Length: 114
Image (cartoon, rainbow, N blue to C red; front, side):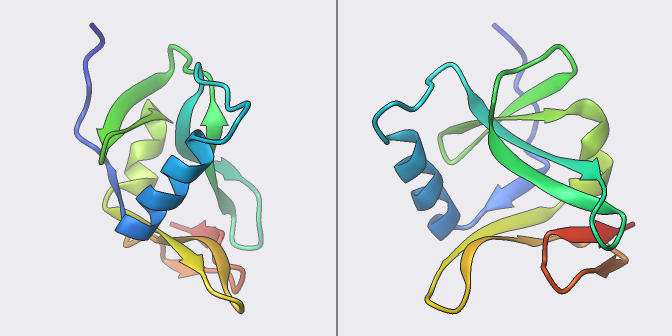
């Protein structure tokens, strides 16, 4: 059994409901886990990653509200304490990221600097 680490991020109930909805869709690849992370780029220097992916040996695994998640071990320093929400409104639809480690964010809400 792989060790499960303490979750560096949290999800709101809206985010958990949307992730569970996506995972229950027909044709979902059940071998993939929810990847949370960052990558270089975006207006402010780094962009959030949130999507389903296969686990690699660079990843830690953690479970949030029953959702198995993976994150590259080195990404935790950028995301520790972040809350992910799902907005389902007409004007604002999608996942949002509230990251206490970001020194500045972009207007799009998916790019940040540390």
